Image 1 (tube, rainbow, N blue to C red):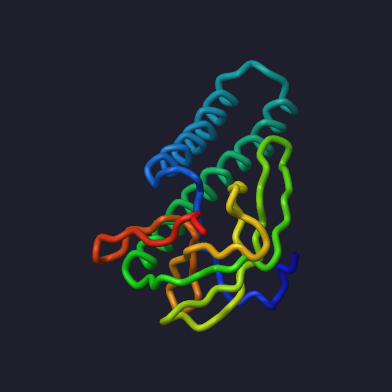
Image 2: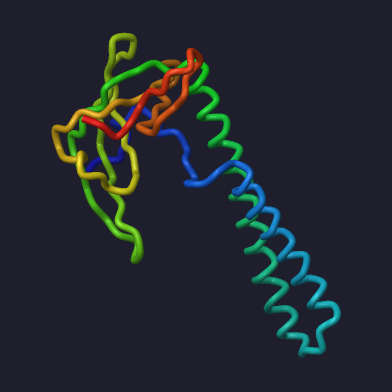
Length: 168
């Protein structure tokens, strides 16, 4: 699989949950950081324990919260653009690599995407494997041609129809 400079498309961010749930988890991470700080103030512990939690735990929770908040906003913006100006296209799988992160199996697809109003380009897409995913398979996609933002996930576009599904 190639994920180098030859790819000219960008897959829309998809966090796997709703916008509101991602923002709530981010807020909970920030509340956890605040709770840790308060706990450090009132906790009867050695100075080095307080320093360890304060310098490691709090920044990690702050970064996790900021990352979740940012990803949720980027996902919302990407799918709003695809709903507003997405065009139907066909994504042909030219390469597929299956990996695992210890719990979940992932398919990393190298795609050649084109359509009636979409000039051809290449991109990659990471998702859970589906039975229809194999090299040579053609999947429905939705593309914003201004910068080749695309997704294979269902998107309800302006006229109320749903485009882009995992279907041959």
